[in-house]
Length: 558
Ligand code: TEU
Ligand code: CA
Image (cartoon, rainbow, N blue to C red):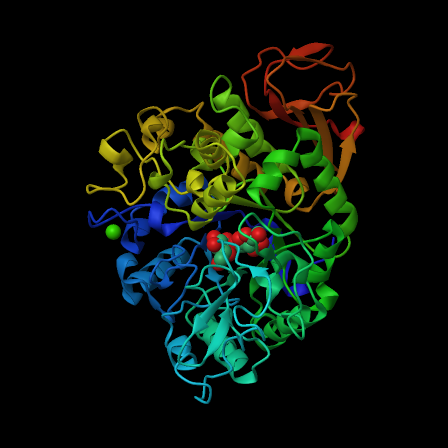
């Protein structure tokens, strides 16, 4: 495996994503904030993570919860002050925790001063900072492009008599990367954060920077509201890669930053273009798969097959992020596991999976507690603009409202955004006020405080997993080889480094399964398991539902 030589340390990272709005409220306004994050630094240190990806904390009117930035070098008022951020940074440094800031540079907020100036006339100095286009000859938007959050991707600005482009909401106008002055502003902003001590960036929605010359119609079929998505169709163009390389050569490379590109891939092989060190782009990538697609296409077998494919693609040429959860996805135990009958073993199995596959594990707040989806009973309870749009489109298609709501309950990004469940006091200890998004009522059963007390909890299992990564370099540096089991839900793979081999065995199903003779070799030592199993592992066994175990193989077998 190759990483750029100055970045060997990235193999040892375990990244924890904080969605600050939902982590901890410190002042009773119902909104999580930076002083709230500071209250849990011991918790994070004890968990063992050594990097934090902080979702956006910049000044923002919160049309898309901070992914609409109106001041890149300021802190959102609701989250605190720059002094609070600096205290967070100092706490991280003191504990050896690296900081990855979320960098949203495909678009800004329409309330950013750049946009306020750009929209004011056709000939102001920032006129070209955004993407402006005359109306179509017959009037109306320049082409058929759809916004990801619904309706046309173009919005009319009377003062210019022109439309501006927004892939996401109309309060998220796309920045014009073709404009050298705009690029300079962005590079110096990145430099500024690097000077302040950040170790890297997670780079948001980065595959769409270049828009096609002449703005042709998207060839994709129209959505129910008549517009056609175009973002994935333009994803990963040569121009976009050129812009990423500029970021690398100007900022990421010289400063040795770790960078995680959130990329849209039309073919899995395209990931290489973003992370091959020779291309000088990102350290690793988080491929974006829309929840609707993931829900429809995932299987246990595919999760491991995808890892095997990545290994074949990238084993010699780069590095990758390994994740099941983030703020855009349903909760992992609800999506891939069982959030009812086999909640605990399936949450542990999923944790074992991401910590033992090749790459850097990315945990999302609450997965270490096995937090679950929350189905709201009315569309009005949802906050997520994507969910609201999807609901509208489903109704336009003629879907029955109850059925549409069921779809949203499975897919919505709000599933991951309900507040962190710290303890069994009101509102799970997240706030003393009214939380901005409802707390999952299962907090009385699922919370950090009770799991801290229980040595067999999911939280302790995650702590043990992270500790094992430190003890066994095979997990962070080892080669990967899948082991055939004859069953699509019984999965096994080996990781080998130097003279050590670890074997992961997962019964990724709610059914018991017979463990084939010989799959676990004589003398294998179980290091961690989603169940307690007394009496060793030799011979034939029935594995219980979601039983998952990590073994250290005897030296002779390695
Ligand atoms: O998400 C990326 C994202 O939603 C798109 O890249 C995706 O391709 C599209 O939805 C599929 O049609 C990031 C953030 O993670 C998310 O929270 C933000 O809402 C979004 O960018 C806009 O900043
Ligand atoms: Ca607050």
